[in-house]
Length: 406
Image 1 (cartoon, rainbow, N blue to C red):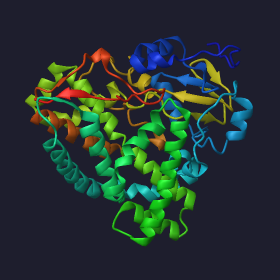
Image 2 (cartoon, rainbow, N blue to C red; image 1 turned 90 degrees about the vertical axis):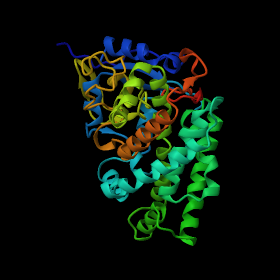
Image 3 (cartoon, one colour; image 1 turned 180 degrees about the vertical axis):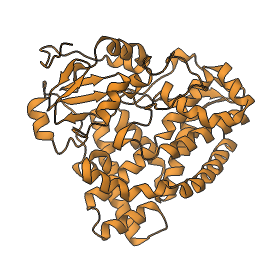
Image 4 (tube, rainbow, N blue to C red; image 1 turned 90 degrees about the horizontal axis):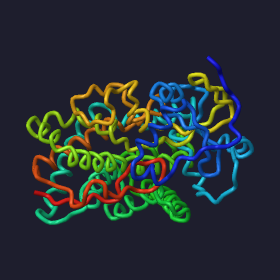
């Protein structure tokens, strides 16, 4: 086998329009052509990784780092290929375990992990079922309604805000700011939303100190006061939990869309509603909310099937492509609730695997089962090919989900 290590003189591109409307043929073409495709993304050289085994390898490699803040000087001197305007996020919002490596990642993740204990998840399941029923009670029947706006986002937002302790009168802006920060194509909107979320986290620190409650944000404030996390780590964790807590809305929206465009499979689930819980993993495999995870940085060379990515490079890792790799999943472009999805990467992999994966499963399964049991003849108001997806390379997220409930 011949191993190549030279950085290509000409970088490829991943077309944004193709990723928005029909990402899977584009990702499949990359996956079939090379294990590592050097592209320009946002002015930087990055290596696109698409094959299932390669994605698992790099996500579990301790030499591959998530903390881009710590390596920003090396990245800017080595990987920057074209100066262009890009969004700048507040430094104090990027110090949670999501953006850290090694001992710091383990320390911070451990301070939050207890909220997803089996006992706590039992209570969260009951809360999710109650909130879901209340939202469904308010939906109009027989006329168009946007299920993202009226159901998926309010459900995810209410669950996370109840858990962490965000006051009711502060919740309406969360879905808007999270969506703009993650998926807006306008740099000023991204920066403004990120700054407002950071400012909100600082306000929550003061609120929890003044009015402590039995909630996660108060508990994390106590950990800060005990010297177990810095103020930047505390506020960054607040932002991370608020933003991450909204992600089940993407899975719910993608799940509803998938079931409405696969009516035979939906009928099978309605014939045996206990199958809804198991089909969530197939939904996040088939329609992964993350096309790519945030970039990683190599601190040592990585060899992938004859291609060596040097140290000091950025990686753009595609969960969506890996989840449709036919070498791992037979007939990967078919939605099959009976599929053995063991090992799918819809929730990530390795030490940075989604901490709230089980809560996300609970929310998604509860929402889908309750919605389709109550409104089994629900239909889209537009052809599937006319669905509008949010812009951006990273997220696979509908902009709206217009349906008629019946």
